[in-house]
Picture 1 (cartoon, rainbow, N blue to C red):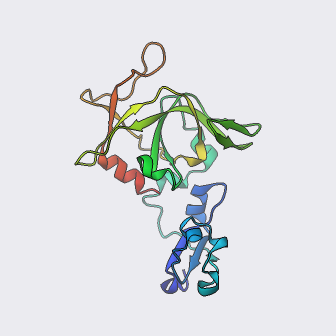
Picture 2 (spheres, helix red, strand yellow; picture 1 turned 135 degrees about the vertical axis):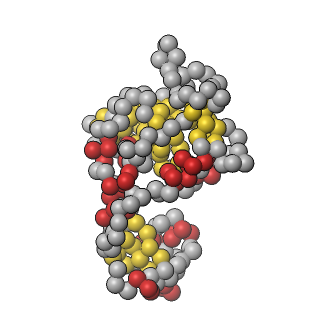
Picture 3 (cartoon, one colour; picture 1 turned 90 degrees about the vertical axis):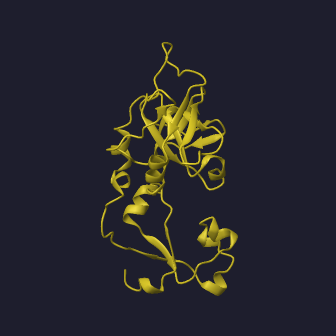
Length: 214
């Protein structure tokens, strides 16, 4: 990108499709990094230091390679068509939720995605008309990660609504949880639910590779 040597801050512009913003831009750039409350929340329009640092400037920057961004090159509706019951998905969460379980939360799907015909509320969250959503169960992190970085989870019984656009678009490599000491993926009990209290392991290598896609 011309003039990139003078750019010390670059962020993806917020759009309805977060992955497309990362893939196609434009990027919001500045010659300075601002640590004010607005900018650290990516609310650059309301920067408290705009008089000192100026406004961010949108610029397009062609990607040199798509290596490492497989999940983000897939269009939203194409990705939604790959989702099936019992698929494990990784969901990006907002900054104020990241200190609970990390920047990614995990869920196992209960059904196929649908497009909402009208806005709806579910568990205190608003889902807009036209959004692609699917129902599923959250994995809940148990304690802190082990010394080797492996993470232990249980599957929560409550069914929740998930925004497909918040999911990492991982297609070719399934996200694998293994049942602790059983080397088995999550399986449903005869009644259709998951066995209460069963713990599942997510290896550090899988966690690291997924967070690298953010």
